[in-house]
Length: 225
Image (cartoon, rainbow, N blue to C red; front, side, top):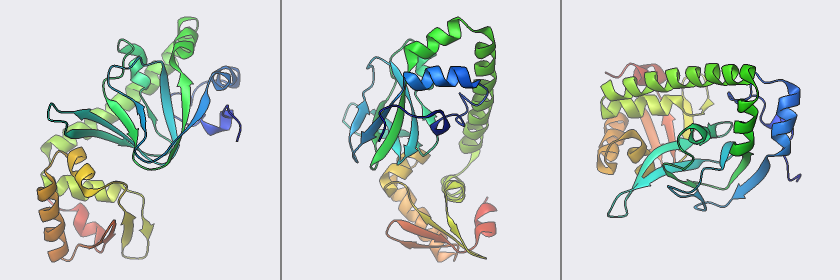
């Protein structure tokens, strides 16, 4: 495997989508591949934020640690998604911990080099502002939606947003993380998630088998209020 990525490996990520090939080539020269085993740490809170990342395969977990050592999951980052890019503009230290939820392959980008490109290129700054504004707008909309939803609604929408094997009437979903991790991500207690699963199963909307959930009635699940 080459040590540096090809342009085609990252050019569709939102941060790079509007950049020309010459700039992309410069970014690729300063990037590198990283591979992590399940559970392996990538960085800790307050570590210097000298790189940002694109997930190519696997899943990353961003989390905070409470005083009692309990993890609070902030986000699960799946394939083809960037993370830690905002650290470039936030004082240069990571605000969370990051570890691999499963075997994960990443592209690591040099944040200092990218900032240098920004300082010398007004067009690049404007393209980046537009891309990040679109991203922030989407995240604010998502936060508003989650804030107003019940735990059942949050889990229903979370399920429907996951990649699935689809048949004519059902969707089969392999949960990307443990139920405890998903509960933390959705801001509910693990026992609450267990009750939600039982409720949806008793109503004939889903079937649960270990890490797999079969959505029997996707339309009905989407209409939960």
